[in-house]
Amino acid sequence: MGERVKFEVDGQIGIATLSRPEKLNALDTKTRMELAEVVEEAEKSVRVLIITGSGKAFAAGADINELLQRDPVKALEATKLGTELFSRIEELEIPVIAAINGFALGGGCELAMACDMRIASEKAKFGQPEINLAIIPGAGGTQRLPRLVGLGMAKRLVLTGEIIDAQTALRIGLVDEVVEHDKLMEKSREVAMKIVEKSPLAVKIAKKALNASLNMPLREGLKYEASLFSLLFSSEDAKEGMRAFLEKRKPEFKGR
Ligand code: COA
Image (cartoon, rainbow, N blue to C red):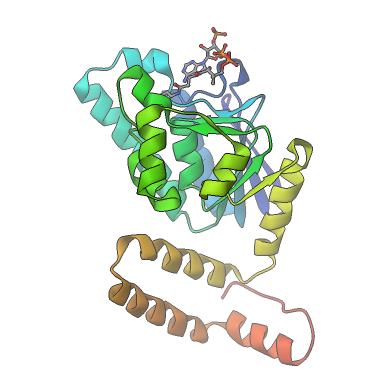
């Protein structure tokens, strides 16, 4: 599609590849705009989106050349756009898998955290090094990181700017799985395919219910879950899923 974000469709799976390897896929305005377009396109055309990077980085953060030009007003505008893009990814109706091939630093780590699942190459490296530039994460780093790894570890990473390897990221819960570098896309597609086989309606509703757990107190979240759970009993897919189980056959979901 674009110059900086390639989008390919393989059956029901979309793959967005950040393609500015000479700058370690630093997320400049053009890259973010192209990613925003790809995300919209993916929601319309595929059932799962995989986001990855080309070369040795997933994304090495915001573009520091652009950061240097910003005054507070421009910085606020930019952070709003970045935050909105990542929230849009988080709230997309289809699941998004981050296939983290290399450096995921600053905005790159924030992008990975906005995805629903994170699969990392053994070569991946993670961190929020903004503190080294005398700034702080501005696209969810101080908010999503503690939710994933706990407040103590998030403070360690944000306040020291330390870069951690994939195994450490796995141990603290920043990624779900670490795989051999050459197996990264194969594994990511395998996970995507498991989701593609499910009812798209149930997948969409499950993601909504899970996301709500971050934003609602438990009692409200449980009520919300109950309403979404009961709603699915009006779908043809739910009847098909239950019948297929009882008839010992593969279900054929239609997404309604
Ligand atoms: N913004 C702009 N350019 C960046 C960048 C960023 N966030 N990250 C890397 N680049 C550029 C480098 O300036 C360099 O460009 P050049 O070849 O024109 O000099 C190119 O990408 C390659 O990076 P380089 O630093 O030479 O690679 P390396 O393997 O030696 O180091 C990193 C890799 C990731 C450790 C290092 O690039 C780095 O620390 N990047 C910044 C990470 C960061 O602070 N991100 C948060 C920003 S808020």
